[in-house]
Image 1 (cartoon, helix red, strand yellow):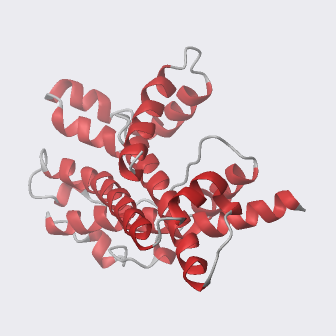
Image 2 (cartoon, rainbow, N blue to C red; image 1 turned 90 degrees about the vertical axis):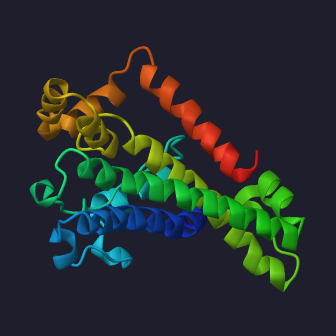
Length: 236
């Protein structure tokens, strides 16, 4: 029962930051695409901060919940991709870079904003940050103010973690991830076309890399970046 209670408590704290991270990420793609000449996402109602428009039942709900329940050291989630017709973009080489980078930049901005809000909470009540640092979800409130600020502070921490994770993961240079699309836009024509041609197999390649990475190369690159940015936004 304690594990179920802990899972539900963790889920309640993590769910809102995850939904916001994914919603802003996808809406940013659609908004930049619209500004660059493609109205597809706008016409389909995907340039919105309504999370229901972006939720993928498996990637947004089941997968993160399962990872939390299993106490996975690595959390991941995703939403329904925003449809972008790259042929409608005004600059076929440059504009896809802006569209792809929009999600990553948005996540990093949300992570930084969450870290700033956490610092403000620490100024309002200096006890809260050490309390959640040592006790985490077991932190108890002393008074009505802390009953509001402790859950908010915990959500800020989760927001930093989710946004940093989504930003770094999406920067992996394999399409259809944002990093892959950015690389396609930056590379010369030959390598760019070769990289773009693997997009239909991109997710399978990613799964294989994460499952069969015998030397841990991917984790040795990704984990330090995630840790560095997380500590930077959380103030160490």
